Image (cartoon, rainbow, N blue to C red):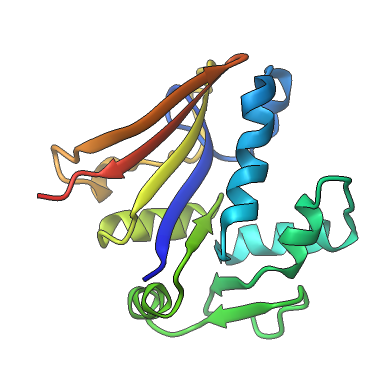
Length: 183
C-alpha cells in the first residue's frame, strides 16, 4: 500500500502558499539534502491542477547535477482535476472522477511514497478524509500573516493529534516529520 506524504514549506503561522519567501533562509546542509532525498525515495506525485500547471511549465526544461530534475520529470504524476484534459508533462495521469475514491485506489495500487507538495485543495481534501499518512514540513521562522494555510480549522476535528516521528534543525529551518495519531 502506498503512503500519502504531504510535504510542504511552512511559515510558523501555517502559510504555505507561493513559497518564494523561503529563499532568504539558510536551510543548512541537512535542509539542502532533505527534499532531494525525499524525492529520490518517492514513487509518485499527487498534485492539484494549479500546482501541476506551474510544475509542468517549469520542470521539463530544467536540469541539474544531482538528478532532481530528471526524477521530477520521469516519475509518475497524478493530477486531481475535473478540467485538465491533455496533460503535456510526461508520465501524467489525470484523476477526474471522485477524488477520494481515486486517491484511495491509488494508495492501494502503489507501494511507495506518494508526495503531495503545494496543492492546497488536495492536501486539505486528504486531511478531511483521513488519507494523509505523514506530514513532512520544513518550518521557516517567519510570520506571513496571510496566504493559504495548510491546516484549515474547518477541516479538522477540535483535537487533531499528530505524533512527532522526527525533528531536525539545521540552518534557519526546522524539519518535522509527523503522523496523524491513529486511535
